[in-house]
Image (cartoon, rainbow, N blue to C red; front, side):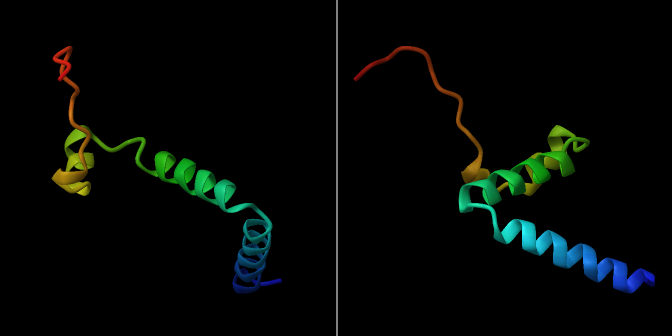
Length: 65
């Protein structure tokens, strides 16, 4: 089996396994993969990726109504 055929086999196996997962499991797997990809990014690099409107706002203490 040459490199191209092995790559295609890997793709087919990955596709088969993912297609048998639930949607929730697929999402969790993708999220875990993204976290692994971003583990070496700095705070500044991460902030450049996400839109400012999506950044979590810090909650203030107390206040009530």
